[in-house]
Length: 482
Image (cartoon, rainbow, N blue to C red; front, side):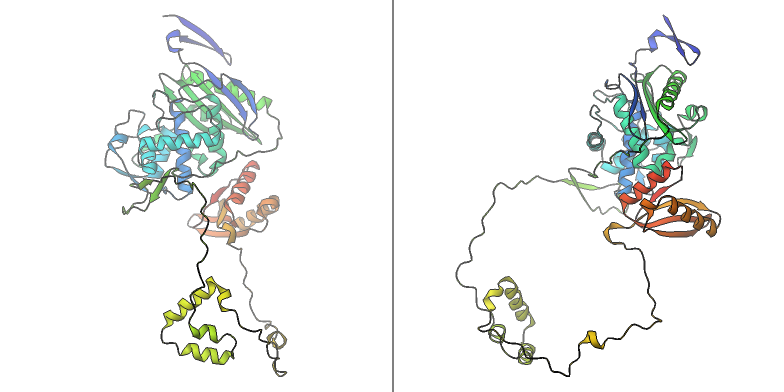
């Protein structure tokens, strides 16, 4: 068996030629602006392996944020999910487990059974979830990606590119920053056991590395989308087709170094555009009688019914039917007489029907002559003249308006005292006046401290404020409507 020597960062790797079959591709971008700093075979369609789970998790975050499912939903594990090959969490068919533990297992351990269970819980089947994955990929600009499953195990036609996976990694980072910390955990509680991060070597060895996702199959080789932050700079690097975990990590480290070297210290931050929320797409979700939402959602396909012609309304034939004499005849009479007559009507339904008819055709009840209003008696004083000012003791209560969808907020940390939380809120508001102006500063007491929150924001303004604060190295996550 032939050998090949590869020189990477001063180290010589001796690798059997037989394991170098996976094609190589790479991409490096400045995460802040999306600018490409380096690429090699970046548009070649290759096997993504478990990088696929970034899309599975992206859709899970989207579904939670839009109320399709919650992190506390108890998911029933199917036989299909339990039968997935390793890497896996070890779920059993019929077992119930919260979605949050499935998300942790998929993000940290790259568990295939957990990824399949996530997709089935949200869309009901692997095929339906794959269709949603492809719709979402297209909306994100991943033009050369086709998904066939939730986990990334090799399947004919299940392909992506280094460029597309870099795009996806950037969206995971900026579209759902409140969940991004999952990818930097060295280990986590996955409900039935603690699991270790498949990327822990890179996380512990490269300064500033905080994610994102590894992937390996025999057909794909060793893949990795990695992100690292140093000061105000953040770089994302992607490698397809590494020969081993060690050589792949060395190559990614080299690419990240290249990115930090090329990226300017200061650059205008341009967040990626989040795709429009389509939910389940061509499926109309009906309410399920199952007491656990999201686990057995019923669905029907909505038939498209395009309008083929514009119909002209038919002219009203003949004169309108005469309204009850009571309402027609009394229009020009004294108002007291009209009120007295109305009170004598025996059927209230008849009056309501007559009033509805007047609303449809008011011209049918036009008075025979213009009635001149009587002069107001001199002794009548207008209410606006007689009104007195409100007493000085009246209390005026004001709050942030919740109109226009201002039910969102952001959290900027938990602090040991109320004073510390209020101080941070004031400091943050002064530093980020453009996006936090008009918000309500709110301190919420918790068992372990005091949460510093800004409330009264729209979803978009909260998202923008959080991103801007994170660019300033301020910890922040969004708070949805309660």
